[in-house]
Length: 127
Image 1: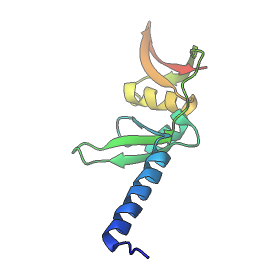
Image 2: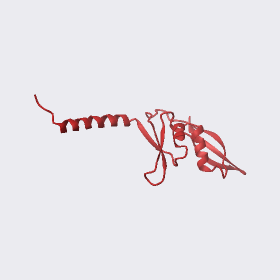
Image 3: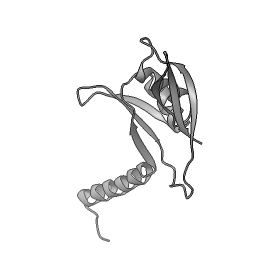
Image 4: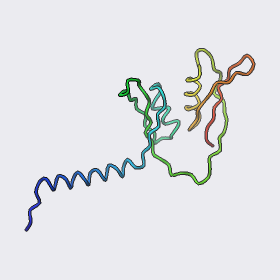
């Protein structure tokens, strides 16, 4: 009976382990969502319940990284819908508008637009 050396056994286990990890990670995607403020909530709002946001600061500037379950590519293109998320102001500038849209609409993003004397938060989201 042939003996398997511990090194061969260890290498075999590492190869099996790596292939399982790669299969598990193959369906995960990462989306960078700017600052870390409300990271997990914005991640779940944008990518659904599979989203898990974490604050990554290895680059020196804290960034929200959203890990979520990848969807297979859609055969039909998504339509873009519009919605509103209130007013933009000094207290709620562009970033605030974008966060509000992400919280209000799955996959949403926002921009401030000035209409006359009023600045409104306009959201776009897939529908």
